[in-house]
Length: 431
Ligand SMILES: *[C@@H]1O[C@H](CO)[C@@H](O)[C@H](O)[C@H]1NC(C)=O
Ligand SMILES: *[C@@H]1O[C@H](CO)[C@@H](O)[C@H](O)[C@H]1NC(C)=O
Ligand SMILES: *[C@@H]1O[C@H](CO)[C@@H](O)[C@H](O)[C@H]1NC(C)=O
Ligand SMILES: *[C@@H]1O[C@H](CO)[C@@H](O)[C@H](O)[C@H]1NC(C)=O
Ligand SMILES: *[C@@H]1O[C@H](CO)[C@@H](O)[C@H](O)[C@H]1NC(C)=O
Ligand SMILES: *[C@@H]1O[C@H](CO)[C@@H](O)[C@H](O)[C@H]1NC(C)=O
Ligand SMILES: *[C@@H]1O[C@H](CO)[C@@H](O)[C@H](O)[C@H]1NC(C)=O
Ligand SMILES: *[C@@H]1O[C@H](CO)[C@@H](O)[C@H](O)[C@H]1NC(C)=O
Ligand SMILES: *[C@@H]1O[C@H](CO)[C@@H](O)[C@H](O)[C@H]1NC(C)=O
Image 1 (cartoon, rainbow, N blue to C red):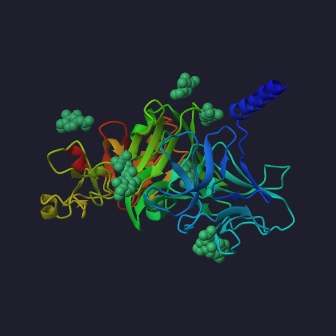
Image 2 (cartoon, helix red, strand yellow):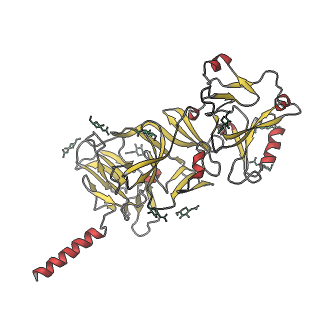
Image 3 (cartoon, helix red, strand yellow):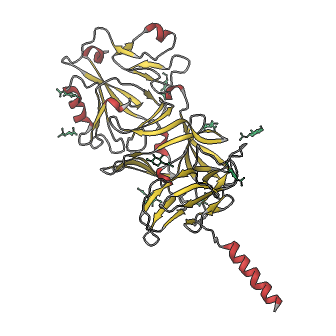
């Protein structure tokens, strides 16, 4: 009899450890106390209280459940740590997920969305790493809040990054203050919508790197991205939203994009055998990545190693030859003396393997091919250059970008990039 019971117990223990009986949900009656951990169904992510390296402050965060190097991908109370282990995350009577201390009313963090009183709410950690606050228990299609809409320093696969045109919410990824402080740091990464959509990295209020506009394959500032095959990338631009979504083709590969504390955007993948994160790409990396490094109408050429990396676009010359001589390109270039703009005989000079200039002063027309684009640009004296808007589609179908103001932050790449055509006069064309 005893023996049978012992067998039964060990079978039960086996079953418990064999299959995840993980709890992935916070409900009104089941809050999350410091020390409790939610594990997503699928066991990829965990949510709970943690303290960063060399800090005793407590934060609620989401991390990879099975990655040996504790890697936090989202933090709730970034700038309001709890100083002891009395924290509780629970659903309050207004249907919000809130973080407070036991028996205390001060709110450290709140989803701050719902004002509905008479409904049932639950918060579930999905296996994508998304913490979702659902309204009602039956229809889990309706959510009132999700952590994917409020990224910390990390973008995960499946997260839409960009602007929700209906709510006006533009997602921003911000670095931690330091490895010991997940508070909102100096560096931020976001989409901007002056002219065609572009992605920028900021330090404070200053742009430090332009990832550029969508070229059909990827972003104009990261030509290497076109060759990778572990993702499929979808760019969405419609009346509801403009966003980019990365999916990993093989779901057993863990990959994340982070803006780290030293101001680098890095994509990392987890390498199981070595138990470490491996860099897939990162930026900014070199002088030519620095935003506006060579000023208006200049461009940066990393292949000019040994000499000054800045150059003027065809038809332009340094604004200040003295600065240029001292290798300061910031004033940029001006139209060459003696050239006549908008006379008969204007044409274009091609810059190959280029990152096209900042499109803040540009316009896009997706119904024009490259040839029609050239004609349109030639007809309008204020048009200074053009390029294909979507290089994945070929010249006829790829749309048209035209520039009308200062052309800044252009560069060339050793590989990849696209052709960019700069307006010049007949004399320049002859040379
Ligand atoms: C934590 O502090 C120790 C000792 O000061 C230091 O060696 C270590 O690099 C720190 N770790 C982090 C992640 O900052
Ligand atoms: C935790 O700290 C708060 C003040 O920040 C205090 O009111 C509370 O009593 C402390 N709880 C414990 C268990 O020490
Ligand atoms: C909730 O949102 C309101 C309005 O946006 C804001 O004034 C308030 O500070 C927020 N509360 C918390 C706890 O974030
Ligand atoms: C991207 O990959 C995912 C996972 O393999 C797949 O479900 C999805 O349909 C793919 N999307 C595109 C646009 O290829
Ligand atoms: C997915 O990745 C895992 C681990 O890297 C590998 O063992 C597996 O063969 C891959 N599956 C496919 C379909 O490529
Ligand atoms: C940020 O990323 C770059 C490039 O991967 C790396 O060299 C640097 O050490 C990282 N900084 C931190 C604080 O992790
Ligand atoms: C795009 O070009 C076509 C053909 O010239 C023109 O009919 C259309 O109005 C243009 N669209 C925009 C948004 O300028
Ligand atoms: C030239 O282009 C600019 C900017 O798109 C526009 O404002 C202007 O009307 C155009 N001029 C002509 C003659 O089409
Ligand atoms: C770099 O410059 C050299 C000499 O000007 C040229 O031969 C070579 O093709 C260039 N390489 C690239 C990748 O642009």
